[in-house]
Length: 310
Ligand code: ZN
Image 1: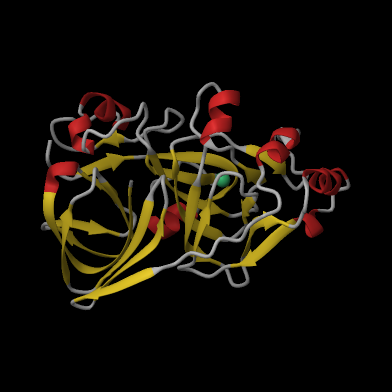
Image 2: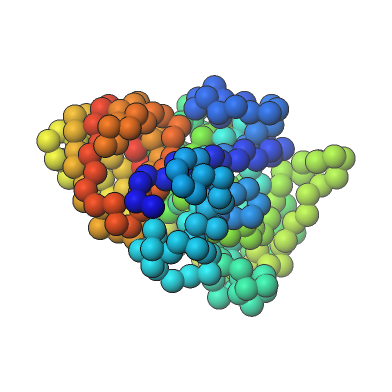
């Protein structure tokens, strides 16, 4: 298989979800509490299925297990990345994820979770939680015990187009009115620190205070990202972050751009506008994978695309 892989992806219901995934991207939603669209996922909790071609109907994990050449024959038990769109119509719980080492030991060999967020859209004066103000584990425990959330949590103002890198160990939360593209390691291990005392079916959701304090980076370290921008024939290519787990770039296509696929695979998400890839029409809300040996490809139109590779 040497064609672009389009996927059929799943929506996930959340207590903080809403309807904007339909309004903004046109996804068919089954109810009014949809919080996530797992656009490119080989995770069993909501897995993507191949949409066209000889492997139509197969799961992405099947393709990873049986046709590793499509992914440049890279090693690994699981497909390494998970790309989601998250629509928060309410605040998400404050949480922290373990790193690979901790997750392997305490979560049945699972991967840890380093993630990053590209802000697609948000209301005016939206905020998110990124980091905390505790100087030691003892201080964090005390502030949690005493419910001093305003003092503990570090809030950041956000705007559409902002990008945040959230390595494992970062205390974080998405605020209401925010739509983001999240790229993360394939893992669903989350330790919940605070859930605003909300009820789900009459009960509070479980918190994981001890594990959270165990894995949190204390004190918090602010990470300055060095962005790198290049203009090719009026199209802009911007590298947002490069880490051991993934590299994320943003493309602003205004005419036509040739790219040489020299990665093991590339995941692309069209976040605005429309155009084509090698003559195939693509538009806002579509996500696809470009396989290892695909070679050169041409993007044309007026589009904003975020893409990732490892
Ligand atoms: Zn998270």
